[in-house]
Length: 208
Image 1 (tube, helix red, strand yellow):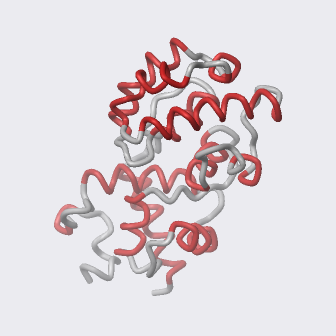
Image 2: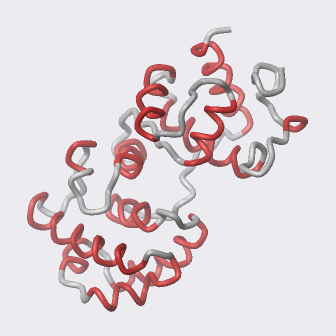
């Protein structure tokens, strides 16, 4: 079986198990998704979802965030971890969105990664979920599962992204990443691969 064939089988199996491929972060608009994803670095989505309501109530858009006092932002996101560096980058993101993008969240990887603290993972998520573009979000669950399936042999996010872009159908890529997160939390966890309950076991090299 080729890597491409195994990829397509995984896409269909996870589509059946998780019909709704949804992002775990709560957001109402492009700005909120961008900020929430920046906060999710080395922090759980559940924790971010607890923090963002108060943050967005106080700073609902890039214009208000651009003029925010960093200390106040720190206090609002303190439980997210790395809050000092995150608070600084959030204010800088607000300023840059206002000054260079007219208050609009950009729609390309190249423009998004120019924003302070924004890497390719965040940029891909925004491009995929907001703008409907083909995207590969290299979440830790996604990287782990693709390795276990024998589709990749690296944990380098950029290499994973480039390889999986070749293997995944463009129209399925973004949703597959979301499904891998759900699957990685429920079945193929970091601690243990629950192969007996796995819908991918028939073609997974780990089990076959």
